[in-house]
Image (cartoon, rainbow, N blue to C red; front, top):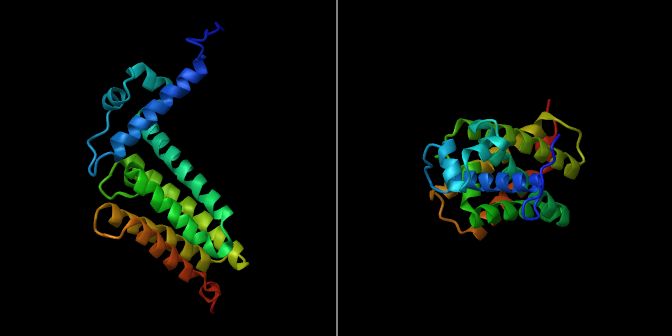
Length: 208
């Protein structure tokens, strides 16, 4: 196999990674940069990133794989930072820490909020990825609740976890659309307080 020599001190793998990041950033701009995004095309992605189409196809097999990668990167980033702030917070403050991080993240970069929660973004890959990530976050939420309450797994905890994930997503969607006029600080406090109300262990006992 022929060796690819470094170009200006940057090797081939680094150049590919840099171009991939440029493309992903362009995708986040195009998907979340406007309240109602235009149709996403490979041509638009390449134009926005300033890269030729051949560089798109060196990292992604098609547009759907690209959109999935944009979404996965955003979810991975927000999940990582949220888990970090929860781990650093005392147990009674973890829900508030999580909501503060999520609301602050989407307030600082509205593209992230629109990609994850906007009802106006109807890209089919995004819709599928939202459903997948919602299931994952519900699973993680349920695990956190079981650990906090020291309960064995049961359907009441699973139901509450799905309720939290769906309720938070709907609230953030309404906030992004302007249907809620709360400040970011008011929203993060309200969401944290609402989730704290679900800590009552009586909610998760089986009642036959």
